[in-house]
Length: 183
Ligand SMILES: [Zn+2]
Image 1: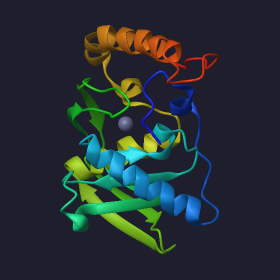
Image 2 (image 1 turned 120 degrees about the vertical axis):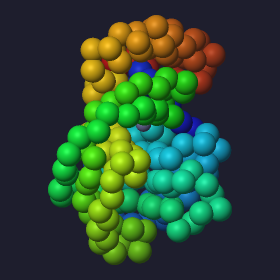
Image 3 (image 1 turned 90 degrees about the vertical axis):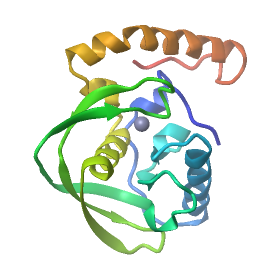
């Protein structure tokens, strides 16, 4: 399992709901947590590892020692959102790119954990931002889509570089040679 980078087409596909929490889902969640910590992220969504299911892992401290901050979310949904806040955001599928993105300040989310129990969480600011960013991934929506005009302009060079790197990665055999990018 590895993190795919923009413009890998897996990032633009809508994820399917998880219908059974089986060994595949449990293994994917464990591997995604390892990858998230290895790359020092706060969250990782299954489409980012080319696993097309509604599965997220998060740790709002980004610290593997803080298991109390670690969340696995299956079939998550935002049930309430309030306010707006503009703040810096990054994504493990766009390494090195950070731009301001406007998000709801407070969200209430519902999701299932790996035991199949429904839980609800209300949070603000950074954790709320992580939830919104990761849930967007399940719908093929990326943070570059949510940037304002200045953020887009400031990202142009990086995005061109990601597109060029994607073609290079295919040449090196890291992705199938016939894989079409999806912007
Ligand atoms: Zn992301």
